[in-house]
Amino acid sequence: MTTSKDTRTPGHRRRFARTVRAGALAVAGALSVGLGSLIAAPAATAAPAGNVVVVGDSYAANPDQYYNTLRGIDGFVPDNYPVTGNCLQAPNNWPRLMQQRHGGTVNDWSCSGLTSHSALGRIDRAVRAGDIHGGTRTVVLNYGMNNFGPGGTDNGADFLNPGDVRNRYLADVRAAAAKVRAAAPGAKIVMTGQMAITSNGMFCFANVVPNFPAGLPIPVLADVEKWLRGNQQEAARQIGASFVDLKTETAGNATCSPDRDRYVAGIIDTTTPNYNMMIHPSLKGSTYIADRMSRAV
Image 1 (cartoon, helix red, strand yellow):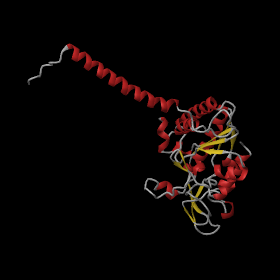
Image 2: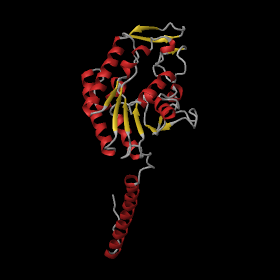
Image 3: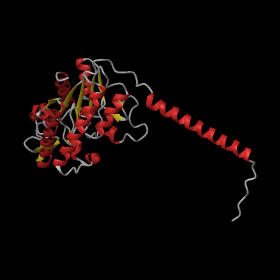
Image 4: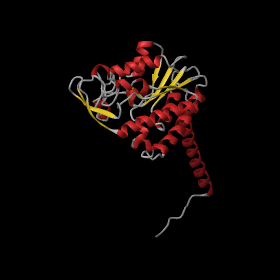
């Protein structure tokens, strides 16, 4: 292979080198300015002092199940459907109902599929958005069930090992509390439990005959509910938060309860009015949580 000889004079080569260095510095400078804008840009307009921030999973977000499943189809979800940080949230979920019914500012950072580990990123985003700040009154942590599913492996846990799930959940919640207190030292933290799904181990997945819920014993689901409650209660103790035990409080409002008392829908369900997602709170259930949490925050 032949090579061409560099015929430029030393002066030309020095000028060329200076030009390359100048160009490199200019590009680096432009990148640093852009990066600086991302890093040092002021947060979005801060939420007013005394606000409440909710970081929860789908039991809080509770979006329409069809919108949530098919949200990737352009134009399928209405433009005015609530969304925060790329997560759909129902206009009648409990954080919004709490604000509507009891006043104050509630900033909803809930997201379907949230785990204790992904909640850390949601807290970071809420801080950057100016929603968790020095004047924030309360931050509600409302998650944990997804840690027992495949998504719960995002922190390295074996989701089939309840002890491993528990240990990693507790570590994540401690990290979450540290993030909250770094941004909002005076804020109260509330750990909120999950509403009851099963009754005496029974899960009523088919509610189609009025006041005749139909189901089967699902011991593993009842166990997960029990483990979750224990994890949340211990997490609250470790971080010095209050614990709202929704599972115990709604034991008579699970999927197998009479129609008028049921707070959580089944899978095939025509007798639970006004629900957005199967196996999630109905409007009556979300209203209960909104009213209950208004006393806890």
